[in-house]
Length: 118
Image (cartoon, rainbow, N blue to C red; front, side, top):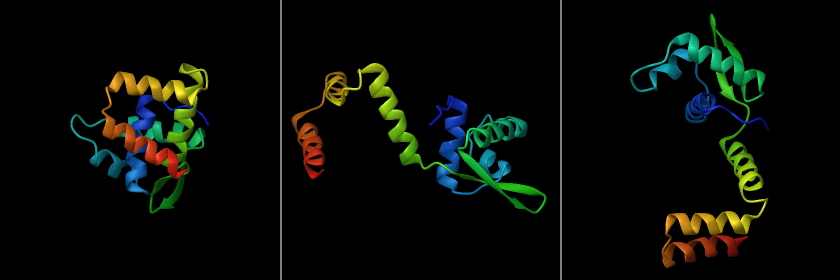
């Protein structure tokens, strides 16, 4: 799966919430300062070319919808991060986050419970 730029990922976050939306609707959900219509439209077209977004005709315009789920993208991104920064070691990645986030015993026990459910 291709990586998204920060701007592309922000638009995908909006589409994952909206499920289906036109460009104007997406812009309406963004806080000030709002980007130009053409900016969001261009990002949507890039996302379509990368296979992340599809569209259907609605009146004179289009409704856009995600073709990739947030879960699938998150999973792929986490695996790439693990491969690129932790030599593919889940243990090293978890250890890093435990140390950097100063997790307490209760949080660690909660993580272990989730692992044991698998």
